[in-house]
Image (cartoon, rainbow, N blue to C red; front, side):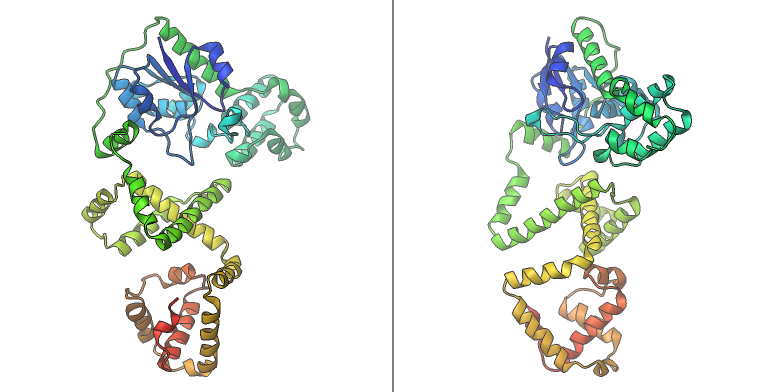
Length: 437
């Protein structure tokens, strides 16, 4: 009998081997369950999985494995999350954490998320999961170490922290003056509860019992819909077709200047994602809806049918579209947060690329020609239409305040000032071509 277990920071490989003879693989990510299903193991166990940075395991992969007659167990971390979501479809959840997600006691992914080290070191955990904090505090209360009021404050302090920064010294530092904390600190090294580790071991024992002949509850497997996105994943994993995404990137590489611009934008997106994760600051629903409205307006996708056709043409699911909008929102947030520090970097890059002197001379000429008093008679509507429709070949934006912010300006009045000065300068016979680079 063969078993496969996806595990990382929750248990070491040695700890898994003590409970079950299994092929041990790193934390699961998208495509992994489908990949191992092709080898038809007798059982698949999911403990750990990636939450960010790489695509998470798809529900459909797990359903596919179940449809092939392979029992899939889940516990402790990503396994508990997916098992809670797919219990009605035959995935086997094990442990208290799974039960709490399944019953609705727990909702947030950060309850089981941890920061961990690299694969080369065995994915060592570098933070403590919230579920272990809860279990430890509950045990301390049961042992008479923590009074109820202090226990509640410890949980509140831990939950308020981003999962990457959630470590006991920092948690205790926030509540150090409360009753019972000194005793709790002394009790913690021996009394602390590894909730995820306990549940993971229980799951491995359950898998071992199954492999040794203990029957499982029978559930009629659901048929996995053969959608285009699912077929695309299978093709990528099977190697039956070259990666379309890789081919597209190769096409961009044939235009080195375009590749350089897109690469810088991609780096900004990655840094913005890391920044948002560190600060536990992800775009909310209203922000995503605004991003969607702006994108649909810019792309001419006013009708729902047009949007769906666009998604199909760009090989995007609805979830992928939302992820794209979230990336754009995080970039906007990162740029806005650093607006006051960008000018020096912009000037540095203009000098590096040889554009500074030309723009400096143009700005100096403009200042000499356009005097403050010379702006009084300019027609604002005429200027705006001239700038956007003639110069930029686009419609005047509906939200000029947001447009001004995207240019690093203080607001709409600053945008008017900028355009008015340029309009009057060009009226003196200076052509728009002088602004090109």
